[in-house]
Amino acid sequence: PLNVERVDELVVLTRSQLAGKTTLQQGMLPVFTVGGEFAPSQVDDLDGDGEWDEVALLLDFQPNEKIEAEVGFVTAGSYPKFVKRTNLRLGIVQGGHSYKEVDYYKAPTCKDGFKIIAQGESVSWENDKIGFRDYFDCRNVKDLFGKLTEARINY
Image 1 (tube, rainbow, N blue to C red):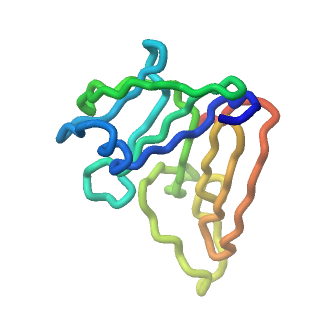
Image 2 (cartoon, rainbow, N blue to C red):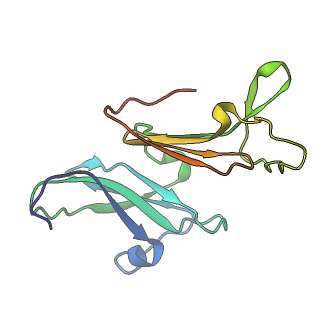
């Protein structure tokens, strides 16, 4: 506990931490309730093996507050829907100056000269607090943008 109010405090629990507190259920995902309401959360598969490795929660704390959360388990199809607060996009140029969103793309080298291939010149990632760009070309430049409001860009 800290003697300050914390809004949207990130709490990350690993699979092994949670397994030390409750019995994990094969094929089920953990969800948390605080005061009878679902706490915004997501499970992350960090090693790509198809099993979640950690769960990230957003909790609001009053000064010196301790929160008790109840854990339950649901199928992936029953996982609660939360307000989308993060956006990640990589759009690669197509013919006619349009862009196609992709999950994977190998950046070209600069041997043949520099050309812009990605929408916004980069991988764009943002949440309701900050925006990032990682320029997807041989420049390998990164930009960070702090936000004055919680507004997001919708591509």
